[in-house]
Structures are given as structure tokens and as C-alpha cells.
Length: 375
Image 1: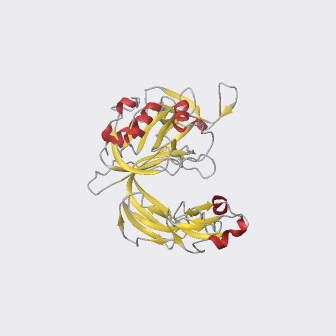
Image 2: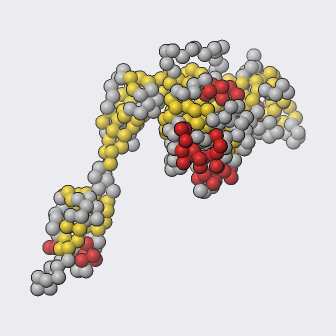
Image 3: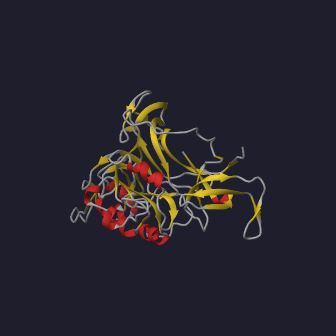
């Protein structure tokens, strides 16, 4: 049978999902092998040094920098509080002494008789790694973190912004081709993962930010709206660290594109259930896609699944998304994989495939113009 290979996105009603949860530096792992954890549980914790606050003591006391050491009321290593006196000038004949209170809490790290500055080190900052998904700890990485495994629903998107978040799924649109605007965002969606249909507008994102929505999942977004949301033109970058108050995952692409009906139906079937969402995206080396993950339970019905295709395999019947005009964003299934290259409209030759589109029509397109939808 004819077969080819192409990159693709996963939209699976049931898969084994593993989350590798690591600390940025060595720390303490708080779980053990076999533990059941919830998405918001802390699996590992460490502490990093607090921020350094420079205090221009000599300048504020109007004394030479070289006089600073003998004017100090604290010593290196002391822990001080906000407002605590840290230095006092001698004044003139004992009169007119000036006292300086600490502007911050911390530990005295250093004092310079050259610059006249004192360096205060803030309290250590706790850094925690959450489980991200309800599941079981299947591996403990000493001093680093743990691997959490779950039987889950797994949906990958094309593009996203914002980091990890967790919330209950709420459907905001009644159909996958319905746009998501501000009118569909309700105050009771606070903390929820809101599922739209087609394009999500900038006004909808603004309303979601005001309502405290955890994440938005939609079929498409306009580039100008994305720029308005972020406040800058994103360009080519790794996303996931944006501080916009919520996470956005786009499942199909840029423009007014309806969410794939199968994706919409799958997410709708789990409305009310908690989902883990991550908008981090990287298109270049080490591809990383945004994702929606829903931990399954024993009570969930087993999804109907046929024989699973080989990873990345393009075969007759394989579900694909077309990623070039004039069929951009359309879904279909492969009906033919001709072995011989075909002459394209541009006059060049390329290997092609035939796709039966969801609207009933058929299209012959270059194989490079499709993306596999892995189930």
C-alpha cells in the first residue's frame, strides 16, 4: 500500500500522557513513586536567592563613602526589616545626627567604603513545580522533579501564548464555526478554560481578562488582534512566557477559521471537567505545540478507535488538514497517493495526494501542503 510521512497534530480521545515536571535548579521532590496527584499539587520545591536591593547610604546621609563603615548600626549577615535604622551620621558636635531607615527587608550582604552603598539580599524565593495533570507518579528524579502519567484526552494546537494553567471547561460557542466575541464571555467563567468556535477577537480576550478566565481555546485568531492583545508584534519566537493574564490556544491557524468539528465535539463532551492547558509554542528546532489535556476517569466511556496508523504515516483514509491556499484550514481524508510526481499549476513537479474534503469535494494537492491529524 502507498505510504508517506508528514508532520501532524494530535487530537486524541484517549492516550497515555506523560508530564515531565522539573525544577529549574536542584531542590526537594515532595512525592514518591506511585503517588496519586492532582493537577494543582506541588511535586517539587526549591529556593533561589532573593533580589538584591542597593541602598546608597553615604549619599542619603550626605557623608563621604569612606566614613560609611563606622556609621553603620548593623553588620554584614544581619537580617533587617523595613524601616529598621541601618546607619546614623555623627552630626556636628553630636548635634544634627541623621538616621537612615532600611527601605527593604533582607540580609546585609555587603558594604562598600568605595561606593558608599549597602547591598541587601531579599528573602529566598520559593519556586514550585506543580503536577499539571491529575495522574500517577511513575518516575522520581532525585533533586529535580517527577514524571506524572495519566490516561488522558490530548489535543494539540497550531499556536498559543501564555503558560500553564488549569480550569474547568466551559463552552462559549454553540458551533465550531461560530466566532468568539466579548458577548460570549460571562462573569461566571472566572478560572475556566473557555472553548470558542472560529476566530477569537481581541475584545473577547479583553473581556476574558477582566472576568479572570484561565484560558481560551479557539479555531483561529487575526494577526492584528494578536498584536493588540500582546501590545507588540510577536514575530518568530518561542511563546509561553507572555504575561497577559490568561493562556490562548489556537487549534487551526490565523484568520477566521472554524475549529475542526471533531476537536470541538471532543472538548464539548468533557464540558465541566478540569483541563490542563499550555500555550507554549516553538516552531523551529525542537518543535513544541500548545496543548489541552484532560485526565480521563474509570467512569469515562472508552472511545471507539480503529487500527492506529504508524507514527507520522500518511495512508489511504488518514485524516489531514490542508495548510495552503486555496484550501487552507480545511479537513479531509486521503483517498489516493499517486506514486508519480504531478505537474502543478506553477509548472513545477511534486508528489501529490487526493483528499476528500469535509464539504464533499475532492482536491489534489502537494503532499507538503497537508498536516497529519494524529488520533
